[in-house]
Image (cartoon, rainbow, N blue to C red; front, side):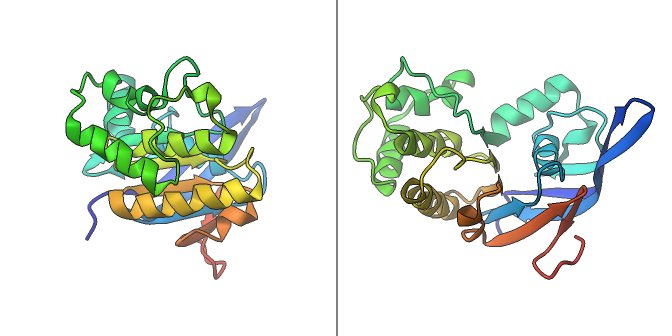
Length: 232
């Protein structure tokens, strides 16, 4: 069994609006397994992005348990959560946060630089392998600013997975891509998810992305439903 996964038990999150308390997440209990892509869809305001932020440890006062490995991140301090994010979680937002003044390889290596890790020959071979897997060729020395939007998205995937995270969280990663680049993005994400064993969770409105989910769930009013419309 793949040990890379994220588990949630009775996770709830509320915000205060004036005198009213509004629950954005309602007792969510589920596991997101490693080596699989789980796609979460649902209407705007249903709690999808809130769920992603809770899993990333970016929210305070989240009720319930969120386990990454053996660690319940809800029991950690802000500093400890930041350390868990750095070591175990990668996030791909709509804004890719790639550095235009850096070349492709340096952008991919940013997570290792942040952790003061030594860049080994094995790591460089892994980058070359992933670039080939994504049909990008050996573009390590190219500046990010010289790549198309679709190519930049694929570089962002490699950066997210280069240091073997347990969890990869994606927030509307194909929002700015056309159909061809969306297909390429998802095909390569599927390939690398199987190789890396990471649990990959994608929040999206994009029906093209939903089709690639090995696990498909829908969020409505802070609750998750499976494909048979059962609350999970």
